Amino acid sequence: MASESSPWWDFDIVIFGASGFTGRYVLREALKFLSTPTSPLKTLALAGRNPSKISEALAWAASPSSPPPIPIFYADVSDSSSLLTLFERTRLVLNCVGPFRLYGNPVVAACAEAGTDYLDICGEPEFMERMEVEYHERAKMTGSLVISACGFDSIPAEMGFIFHSRQWESPAAANRVEAYVVLESERSIVGNIGTYMSAVLGVANASSLQELRRSRPKRARPQIPGPPFKPKSIERQKSLGLWALKLPSADAIVVRRTFAALTKNPQGLQGVIESVEHKVKRRQLWPTVKPAHFAVKIGSKSPWAIIRFIFTGFFIGLFGTFAFGRKLLLRFPGLFSLGWFSKRGPTEEEVNSATFKMWFVGQGYSDVKLAAEGKTKPDTEIITRVSGPEIGYLATSIILIQCAFIVLSQRKNLPNGGVYPPGIIFGATDLQEQLQANGISFDFISKRSLRQ
Image 1 (cartoon, rainbow, N blue to C red):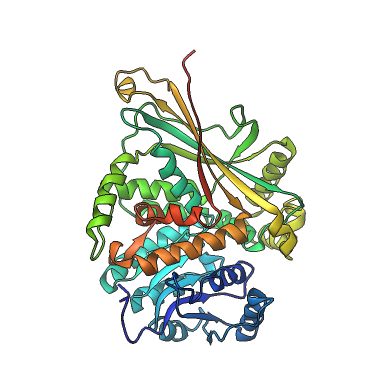
Image 2: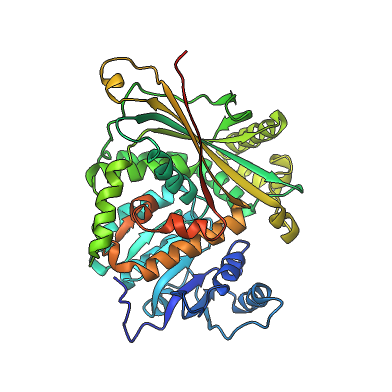
């Protein structure tokens, strides 16, 4: 564990990849809190392979003020010594360099070796699971806490499910929860090319993930009341008035990893030097969080938007399986996504005009005994919502920085080290309250009976 008072610790946070599309927004968010009286962020450094571009990003992030005197270091994933030398001086690394499949492994390796904590904004399931296989034991030994998916992928899904689950007060219990992501904007907005690249590479390497899972012991499976549930691929969601398409996103996979961790540790993970207050909160919280069948879908009032998603997925699935097809997909992202993604990325005006809503629609039982008695049709529906600003840059930056502040300020209440999904680490902290204070809302919407 990174000591909170180590005299050799020069930097609270190093942002790795601060000059990238998302990295510069993360930097701007961090600057809002740097050295403010209540912030745990007192020292910050930036790192990447092009210091001059990082300097430009710092000037942009600080504008209209002059950029503060923040150290900038050369560090490259192809030069492991450059990473290790810097990370040995750092409490927490925020990795913004993707696709993580291509560039993430050396960063995690250096953090695990140095005993430095690590957060990233990855949404790539194979990378996350492979890091757990390769570095969990080493990270536990050195005290490095490694947590991926600390951006829009997958904190709203993780914390949103925990919030939703707690609305099912005993003896009620959910059988299924479907999350509907709705993106709204006053302007047409294009997606981050890095996200598109990750999707293309994910299709290209889908077999690698299956091979990885087959090589490992099966994860613990939680008990879920009621029958198995297979979500519809395309549906008209009447309660919300949406057209929806099931997504092959990381969110459902990450949430299921937290379910598995919770099944093995029903009261959560013990902190390294845990306060009595946190221990009580942890032991009270986790028994109220009940696993359920979980799926994530993209939703829209317009069927045309769903058609765009279908066509984009079709092209990526068709061309992503062979080299020449991937070359075409990456060369012409606007064409194959029907304008959804672009190499130029969105403008700042486009980003500021966008928002998201993530609706959690749960169906289950007013009394869990109904499922055990064979009355398998759910009789209750609960709807909750997580909402906030644009997902890829604004919400992701807010979420990552608030996760970082939890690690910095509450490190003794967290496990000593290891590779974990975010839900099992942050669920018992006050992350939800911090997100709410910074523009990410959690709301109870409705509860109704499904009995005819």
